[in-house]
Image (cartoon, helix red, strand yellow):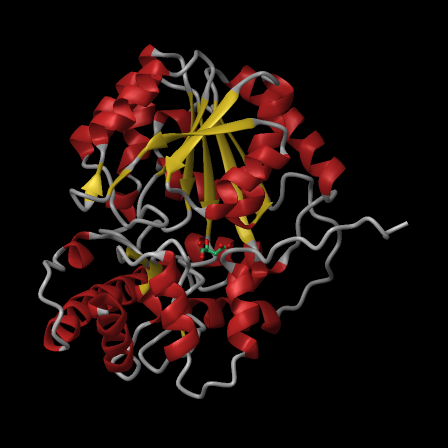
Amino acid sequence: LFAAVEMAPRDPILGLNEQFNADTNPAKVNLGVGVYFDENGKLPLLKCVAQAEAAMQADPKARGYLPIDGIAAYDKAVQGLVFGADSAVVQDHRVATVQAIGGTGGLKIGADFLKRLNPGAQVLISDPSWENHRALFTNAGFQVGSYPYYDADQLGINFDGMLAALNAAAEGTVVVLHACCHNPTGYDLSPAQWAQVVAAVKARNLVAFLDMAYQGFGEGIAEDGAVIQQFLAAGLDFFVSTSFSKSFSLYGERVGALSVVCASAEECTRVLSQLKIVIRTNYSNPPTHGAQVVAMVLGTPALRALWEEELAGMRLRIRAMRSALVEALNTAGVTTDLSFVTRQKGMFSYSGLNAAQMQRLRSEFGIYGVDSGRICVAALNTKNLPAVAQAMAAVMQA
Ligand code: LMR
């Protein structure tokens, strides 16, 4: 039966974890996957999460099946965070939100629904984008193209190219946009540029699908979510996938959501019924624990305040690591302008290193980043940073 099955390539991101775990180099550093590690190189268990879990353990509950669309209080908390609890769209019941298995699950539910709705639509992702965007939408049955995003010469965004591609897209094209902390480049659009993107989406009748996996890691929770308000103000119907993997350090709990903004409450009821079919036929209904934790933290003022404080702590430490990396690279003799590293937002830095340089970092120095040149600055700390900077300087100057 399986004689003709071909060996599939490793996943470009998660496959690096497998390689890293197998590496016996004691000085190895994992800057591959987008995971935040603290100053001691440890994956944090946030205090707000630990407190919510302690409260849950003090009053343990049996676990029946959840509704297909997940915990109602969780879906409501997601809407409050993403759109604002007092926003007209939430008040008017025009958002269909379903709990999803991570942000990836949110994307996949949205992709499967869109495929039923508009099977002939093209999908455009940014060039470059998170490696899984192309694979996920392709597997959902779409033709996936791209719009220009990264400008290697300017060390920034090719905004004219991006806008031209959106303006040339056929009506109904699904455009996958990174709401904040662009993965992999770290370069985000300015509010004025977003306004132009929103106008192009509206004028061309495109379908915006915002991937928001890093809310709070750029400038702040409200600032990073500001683009949502622009889409709402334009009166558009659109999709948002949410992930709490990073912002709650709950990677393994797979806590995410999909929200679909609709034109009316009645339309929203019909959309929700279709999302539920997609979920039911894929994995029936979602798991309980992680979503319960997030719902409790977001719904309890003291825990929510603690979460915002802890999230700000992660954001600021990443920023400090960006500056420290630039300084260490300069000290190690790199003379080119590295200010782009501190302009980038979120967990990643698109370092400009090519695949050969990234492979050399791995094989000679045990430093793992993605072949695209992406490194996870959220995994740097004051202890591993000097060796990382030395190794990067060595491959950059060769
Ligand atoms: C990443 O880009 O490293 C993260 O989003 C983790 C993943 O699932 O790829």
